[in-house]
Amino acid sequence: IEAYANQHPCIKVITIKNSGPAIATNTGIDAATGEFIKFVDGDDVLCPNSTELLLNAIIETGAGLAHSGIKEVETSSETYQYPKENLEKHKPVKNTNSLASMVEMARFNLTCILVKAELAKKVNGCDERFFIQDYSFCLRVSSVAHFVEVPIVLAYAPDEANTRVSGFGAGAQVLHDLNMALGYFYGDNPELSED
Image (cartoon, rainbow, N blue to C red):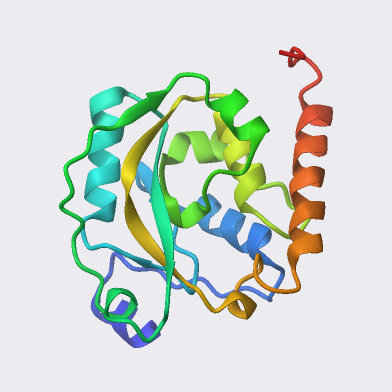
């Protein structure tokens, strides 16, 4: 990665002590200098047109965050090894009540999203009080911006469950962190209505 980055001055490699995904994600958010941030988990892959379609959805709707679908596939599959553009016809679906949607459930991971950098910084990124970063980040952004869905699969994750935080044996940790994220979010935002 460093050799590749040395050939491309727009790439910056940041190395930190292993402190978990929330702190790593926030380190990247803090260092971001562009107008948008595109996340990709270390074991996920994107369709080549993923960022373009997400950006078009934000521009078209004025949303602060765009998200797509993600599908689990075998890592040895051609889909995972050589993802192709998803050319399915679709119409972006704006969600003007993103907060209610996110409170109801964790709908996607960070690989699925493109977000305006100013919003990521405004909400101070992920909640670092617990391990899993996706849900707390999306909850925080949903409280200050509308979302738009690009209702097609634009990312792939490995289906080997033991390679993912959310995989086999991690169910209790995931459930704990999702509930903690929601609890801390409510505690940090006492002005939210019960509705």
